[in-house]
Length: 170
Image 1 (cartoon, one colour):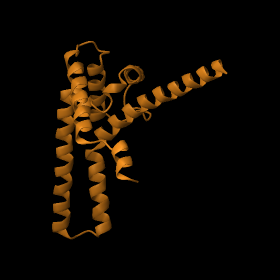
Image 2 (cartoon, rainbow, N blue to C red; image 1 turned 135 degrees about the horizontal axis):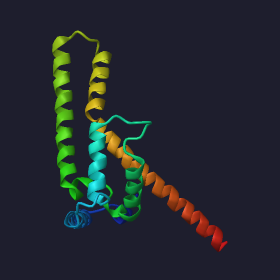
Image 3 (spheres, one colour; image 1 turned 60 degrees about the vertical axis):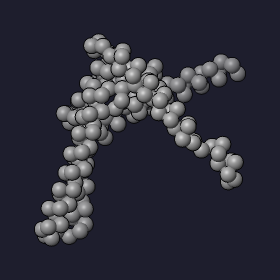
């Protein structure tokens, strides 16, 4: 690939700054429009994240069907907000950062303890560390799955809509 071709497809610092400013602008707009309506973007995502932090799944579902439907609606109309949750809803951002810190330091502490004891084979140590991290990072995984499920429904619906449109125009 030539330098000219790379320049056409790669982002430069100016592009990245523009994307960052746009993301911050969207997040600021979301924060300004926060309200206490239980169906608002902020309330639904906060409730979903809180449930993922507290509960075990019921029938492989982390949140209730009603909240899942509302998340799907937000995925449909608020797609420009995806990936910006930690900035859009500062409470979620702070809690995710806190949990990330706990997970990282928890793993480091377990490593230190296991290495000091020399009582376990390396494969067993690795498995114990993996299981500990999976447990500590479970809420993030569950929240990602909940959001991914909402996105998947919207994508499936969009695909079906496009298929119907193409059949009508044929």
